[in-house]
Amino acid sequence: MIECKYGNQKRLFINHLGELIPCCYVNAEALNMGAGHPAKTLFGKLNTKYNNSLHTQTIQEILDGSLFNGIIDSWNTDTPVEKCKKTCEKKERDIFEDNFHE
Figure (tube, rainbow, N blue to C red):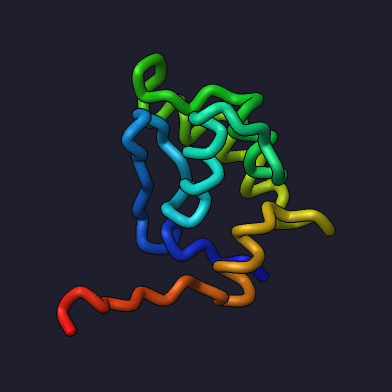
């Protein structure tokens, strides 16, 4: 079962492009698409299809919109958003290594 870490903490993520996305874990693909690369995952396809820009919509409009609902709805299918499954179901998170302060 996918338990959204950000959702459970009532957190959201706004990237430097002004896009409201569910969490930092999916931001890498959002930024790649912002640089002109094609969508590679279900999140990417949803992010391409539905507007999540705070320049044109309110936070509530985005939260109630098809991007966030599409992500949440995918959790109850055989093909959930891959990063959600990996990060919030299997708990495979990136590990931060602070080599700067050594």
